Length: 159
Image (tube, rainbow, N blue to C red):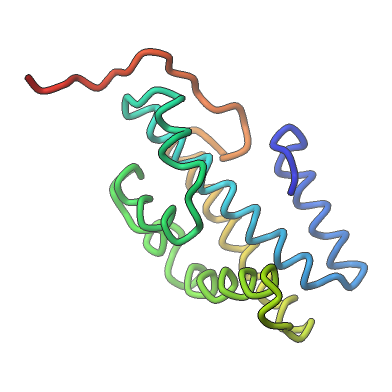
């Protein structure tokens, strides 16, 4: 949707513009995509910091959907917490439903009322802000800045 070079603030501005003009379904799609992108990039950062090469991290995470990324988060996350624990259950509880709504909207399976889309967008953005804040505190990476690069693996093979 939005390249990382635009930055998170610009992505937020564009989502706000969609909402302001009444395009709440598009705002929901974009907000969930933005959360997914932030999660994917954060996993790549964590994997590189754990010793995987940048290429290995790209192979591990680039083709995975939201549910699979969510399942892998505790493996690479600081503290091994689930996303629900990391973001907080109160904020996280709305995200799976928003992801399901996004998927049904994108695939043309269902149409949702705009007030419902507006509400889910706000909930996803709230969870995303908490997620980014925690990432900066715990990992030193916001999900949108330049990813760390590792050419040679720092993982040793057991012989």
